[in-house]
Image 1 (cartoon, rainbow, N blue to C red):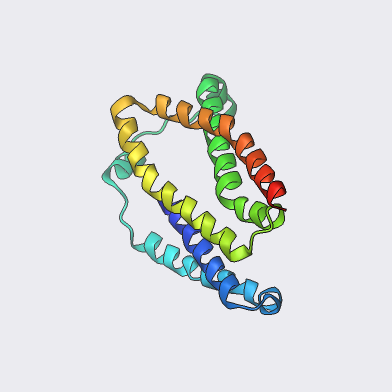
Image 2 (cartoon, rainbow, N blue to C red; image 1 turned 60 degrees about the vertical axis):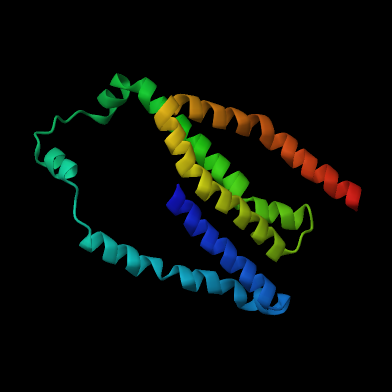
Amino acid sequence: MVGQGLAVLIGALLGALITRKLAPEALDSWGWRIPFLVGLIIGPVGLFIRRHLQETDAFLEAHGAALVWQSFGTMIVAHVKEVLACIGIVTAGTISFYVILLYMPTFARVQLHLPLDQAFLAQSISLACMIVITPLSGALSDLIGRKPIMIAALSLYFVLVYPFFVGFMTIRLSVV
């Protein structure tokens, strides 16, 4: 999550820089392509890392061990509770990440009528907080367990996301 947050943070900072430095006409005609061009760098970097990265001993042992093959259906039936929990965890994390950290600049621009560079800067602040909080949450989960952390975080998200959206809209309407 820290790596993912860093990647989006770099994109948000680049977006803030571009929208601040370029005229709106330049941004609309060609400037929006700049982050995509910068993003092309990641392909060769990822390929280089993948080609030169050594596999872990645990992977090599597991890969060399005798494998027990099950059909996909048999495996799903045997582990239905675990599969559903995994789907729920991934879905909740993905939805919260996209709504809070990726949709917010659009929401701030379209609904709150903030300048786009300010929306990107606000996004950058939230991403920086996420980058700092993620390892701290991991350390706390080592002490008290994964379930309480995940349940508390997801519960807070579901309880607070709608009131925050409504609150931002109310603040915006009262300013206009």
